[in-house]
Length: 133
Image: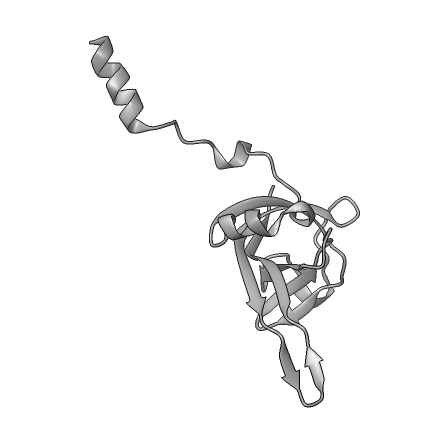
């Protein structure tokens, strides 16, 4: 009997971890390797907002703190943060929030625009963002 229970436990894998109880890393400290591994997944992150809201493609977008030169942005669906989104900054301790969203890595290659070279861009986006309550 014990062998059967042990075999069942080993084949079933570890018990699922409650998403709400996971500690939230800071998006500013997320490495490109970690971001690539988490790309496309729902994650819980802490962010420091560094900009006023900007309306872009039907979303409300904020820039976030970054420890390197990678652009980090948070994309809220219109109406997610309440009121007239263009005038609303989500409540939080001096712009520090904890959010759940899907992580997307955007890579743009450098290009030449006439005589000017426009360097490439790497951006980490937290899309479909929602405030953790």
